[in-house]
Image (cartoon, rainbow, N blue to C red; front, side):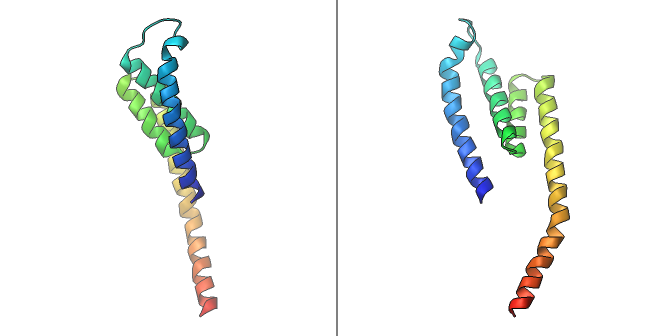
Length: 114
């Protein structure tokens, strides 16, 4: 439940960051005009980084993959997407190790209450 709250909080923060990012994009580039693709690439990379900081690797990977759509073949975005995929795999393995113990604990609790 807490993870869901964190996800929506991060989503809200990243959306607020997007609007700040768009409004400040011109100032951060020292008066250079950025293309839509460059703005969206930077936005998704930042969002991916923000999600990674709070261990939401699936959302982070999705944003890195979106960044790759705006800059195909980018090694940084591709590397970060792969790193997120590896972390997702590790997290799934942890769940598979813990799950039998949780099921035994639940069964034991139900048995004691009968």
